[in-house]
Image (cartoon, rainbow, N blue to C red; front, side, top):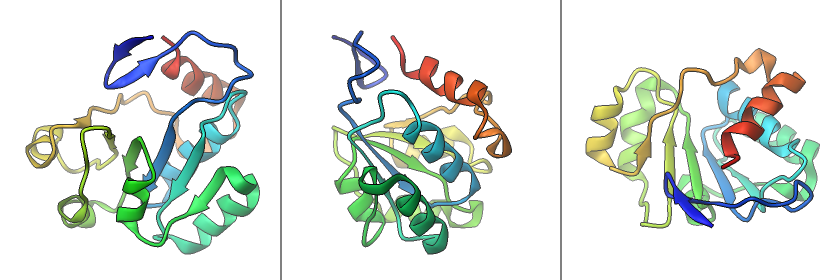
Length: 156
């Protein structure tokens, strides 16, 4: 396959699961919506690993999607178990949370920190990617159109 944004893109059958593990630091409304969208793709990823922040929502997602979704013991365990890490915590916690995480070269990090300018976040870690403003609204996460948007975003 060819390289694109740090992830290897492949043209493959929709029946074959993605070969990446996705991690979610923070399990608020936005990350929960993204988890639901990714978990319901025809070819879901190898695993979805959630931080224990927002324990009730994390437990709900784990129960909803069975072995695909696990809850890690802490935020660093999410990073260690994942290839792609979505950081979506409350704005006032963003800097503290990012400072505490240790990423390696294999990680692609997606910042959902709405109040932290991307340039500032990138000074902390150059692997942070811009997130298009076209992400689906959390309340629309269950719609088929939102799932198609996510599926197109991961296609080459």
